Length: 249
Length: 313
Ligand SMILES: Cc1cc2nc3c(=O)[nH]c(=O)nc-3n(C[C@H](O)[C@H](O)[C@H](O)COP(=O)(O)OP(=O)(O)OC[C@H]3O[C@@H](n4cnc5c(N)ncnc54)[C@H](O)[C@@H]3O)c2cc1C
Ligand SMILES: Nc1ncnc2c1ncn2[C@@H]1O[C@H](COP(=O)(O)O)[C@@H](O)[C@H]1O
Image (cartoon, rainbow over all chains, first blue to last red; front, side):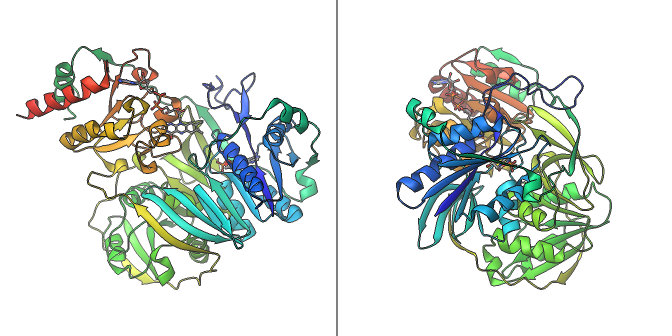
């Protein structure tokens, strides 16, 4: 079974981002970029499926600027077999990403798409569900455990109430949550080997998809700021303040 | 213009998150309809009909909707979408699972986690773990939104909507529901509690959360946690507060043994009053806390519990 793993290049989760003074967006110049943490988890899961003999080939896909190749090389160094870049300088939003991925799926015919539940830049949590809808495939979102057998995936999902378990028929789209696994680091020899793995470049035109954004980011501003308060010397003082000026107990 | 709200419910009652979503729907022009899809869901449909501001309830019965799957609810939304300009769902794991799938089927670029409605097509939402607040305009003829429940008031009672019965869409049978492990809840629900007491890695173990339980019981609080505490197995996943967990905005949030990473702050910084207890006076949590206590939580938390008990008399 072929597994497709979409990986997004995002501002590293440790970076404290800055809003541009003209409120046109977030300053991404000169900041550290990394693979979206959830996508690392998805890629790790795909690699484990291959190690178990369930997956035969792992194809990592990234959509965006030419620099997404770095993210793809990271996926290859972790253990993906080959990579596809869908190259465009147009700002990609989840619906466009889902349409482009659907076109890649049509070419590659994977039995499973494993992807992140959420990109930590736009925080949309949409693409996997949209892709499944476009393909008419079942979806299993927010996975914290995946067992594959007999053409089906049994998935434990992290939901607000606790854990939910569902079975989906393959092919399917699965989006992963934080507790699925701990991604490995790429070793130096594997980083070297990854440089020689195949990386194809496609375009939205070649895939026949119009990726134009349908949401307009009118303004990107600072969130309301909280002021640091006071450090108190004792629990007595805290209780007095909470009862008195704060009036919350 | 008409708004349709996808209700989250247990066939008897309407989930609190849906009440907030109906509250958000009131900010949009046009009447509000509520879709209640369930199995023997008449009580839930009746409850939805009593919500103020609701004009019509669409009740859809099917045994498969007892534990509905995203595939089936998205197909149902597409079937009823005609005539609706806005489709809303709460930004819970339920709404987040269903609405994007329906959006793709309707060819709509949806807006997640809306915190403010500025007009029929213009909304505010946080990006980058709450570090930027974006104003987004939807260019599609129809708008699909998930609603951040802490940002909108609940709809009250006093409505008398008509209930219309609508046909179900036969399930495609691509997926099936196996079960749900739901922790028994002795305390208020995290996202709607008036007070939340959360523990982090500093708690050291699941056993140690007992001292938070005592404090929480005294305050009538829900207990939450940081990702580190959940990853370490101290508490289950549904306790996680943050960018990728639950969003809370209680009157009082007490962060104990939590450093205050941006991903955690994203889930709680709209709380009215924040208290932090941490032994590291440099911990970033103190930059957002109204009141801080610097010291060992294993000493301070029992002291705080005792002092609250004494203050109660
Ligand atoms: C993609 C992604 C998503 C994430 N999503 C979330 C999320 O939704 N929610 C979330 O919380 N995190 C999330 N995180 C993790 C986040 O970055 C932090 O790692 C996490 O919040 C740290 O948890 P913590 O504060 O409990 O642990 P730490 O950062 O280790 O802090 C522990 C604190 O406890 C204090 N302490 C220790 N012992 C004591 C004691 N005896 N008395 C008093 N204080 C003590 C220490 O001084 C320290 O400040 C996410 C990370 C990533 C990459
Ligand atoms: N530009 C992209 N390239 C590759 N994968 C993407 C891209 N955008 C989104 N994804 C995938 O979709 C998931 C969810 O993203 P989102 O819906 O934007 O929160 C991510 O974790 C990725 O797996």
